[in-house]
Length: 312
Image (cartoon, rainbow, N blue to C red; front, side, top):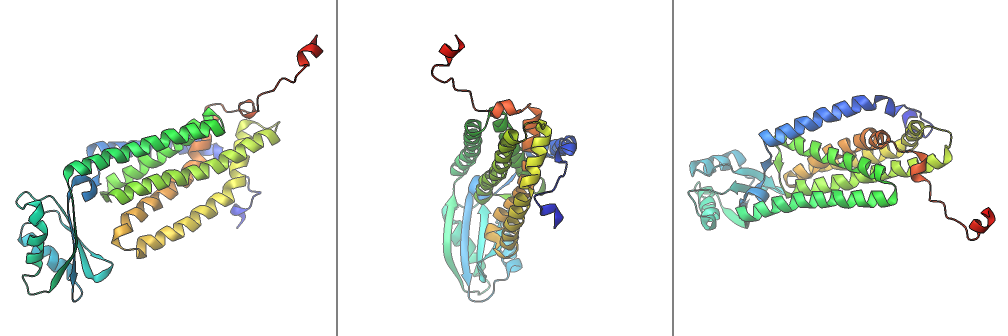
């Protein structure tokens, strides 16, 4: 395929204003949705009870949901876990049932029609713990972005640092916005996926920045725009192939990995798509907009011993 050859010469920076406008629209939509609609937080953050039960035969999920409705268990999420005979029930806190008794009440309801039901596992997350997880998760992302900014500033130059963090913040905001708009459950696995997206996107960006730094020293007569365009083209095949192979794995997890990691895979799929886009159309153009030049990357001149006497 010709678009994967290293001799491609696409003018990516020509459409950077359009890319910035598109990203601005997506970011605004994400922020508005987050503050108006919010996220559909899972039990990890809201608190509640998780009960895992086993049946002798394939479980009838619609019937289980009806049995829970009959005893006024509100907001329960019922799904198979691992096999058709194992069911996982996730329930928010119930006002009319004590937390310690929820699993017993549920088990009695499921066995009321004569089915043989065995409780395999049970866990409870309190609202205080859920709130702490929410705060610590947000803090983890902020600390990660700050550490990345420092690392890129030390390795390259502060303009590259701002460009990389702008791309990473762009990715996180849009992925969170996607979960807000679609109301897909946001739990700890999704938070872990967000941190993985930061690492993936940064890796792509660093590869492009490395080539930009090399080309600034090799293409001495080229303009910064020409250098950045050439660098993106030279790394294009690597970027596309890495994204495609990663997407194949994530799609397999999404369709065949089961409900437990469904949200995790979905977050990574969106994150990889957005991260690939931002490494090309956000990180490098932002660096260019900040006025990066060859002088920013030239090593400082070291005065040789005795030069001051030669000058005299």
